[in-house]
Amino acid sequence: MALIADLVLALHFGIALFIALGLLLIPLGFICSWSWIRNRHFRQIHAGLMLFVAIEAIFAITCPLTVLEARLRQTTAPESFWAYQLNQLLYWDLPPAFFLGLYLLCSIWVIYLWRRIPPI
Image (cartoon, rainbow, N blue to C red; front, side, top):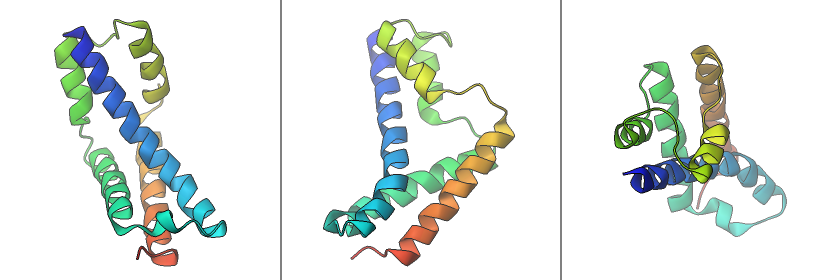
């Protein structure tokens, strides 16, 4: 089960990285005239994931991937070196209000980017 939990954690980290990089690469791509940043499918997935995270924060819902990983591990501590490293990058020890504000701010940024740099 530890390997499956590590894979869930890696997927979770990949999704978080996709969202974070999108927040930076979309405006950078606009400046650099990268056509792929206007791909509708990419932008819908990016905006949908960001809004999902913000809704989770608003309603204080624990991410389903976090719950799944914890159930697979039957603990909250990662068991492998890579799981520990990803855990340190993904889970910050800050108050929930910080994350609520961060996710709402990022959601507003995504909506602004959608209107300012619309997908094709």
